[in-house]
Amino acid sequence: MHQLPNIQLIRSGIVDRLHQLPNIQLIRSGNVMPWFAQSDLFIGDISAAGYEWLYYNKPMIFLNPQPGVLQASTDVTAMTYLWQCGEVCEKIQHLKQLVDQALQCDHHQAMRESLLHYSVFNPRDQGATQRGIEAIEQVLLQQDTNLVDAAISL
Image (cartoon, rainbow, N blue to C red; front, top):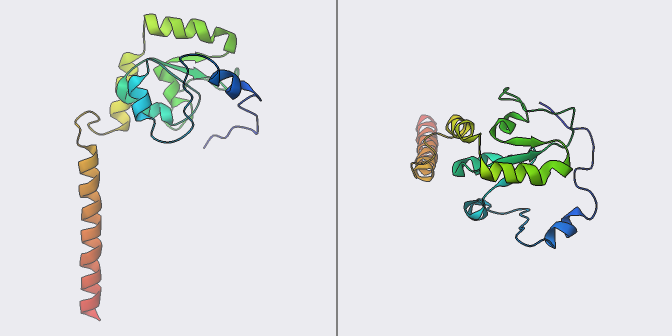
C-alpha cells in the first residue's frame, strides 16, 4: 500500500477563494452523483471519487500533490492508477490550459470506459442496487439456515 508523507495538500485560504469564484461548486461530502451528472469535468487528486465519475465518461484532470514523485500508473494497486483516465496537472499554473484542452478534445474516453468496466460489473444496466440487495438477502438467508441447523443439532 502506498502512503503519502505528511504534507499539507490544501493550502490555507484556497477553499475560501474557490468559494468566491462563479460557476464553481466545491463538494466535500455526501452523495456527489447528482453534482457529477451536472458537471462537465472532474478535477481531483488521488481521491476514490474519481471512480464514481467514470460512470459519466467525461473529462478528468488530476492535481498531482507530489510533482516529480507521483505519476500515472498501470499498476492496479497504485494510488495513481486512475490517472490514466485524464491529464495530470503538475503545476497549478497549467490547470486552466488543461481544462480548456480537455473540454475541447478528450483523449481519454476509451480508457475511462475500460476502467469503469474493470471496476464495476455491468455498470450501466441499472441493476447494481437490485443485485446488491439480492446478494445481501442470500447471505442473510444462509445465516438463518446455519442458525436453524445449529439449533437443531443442540
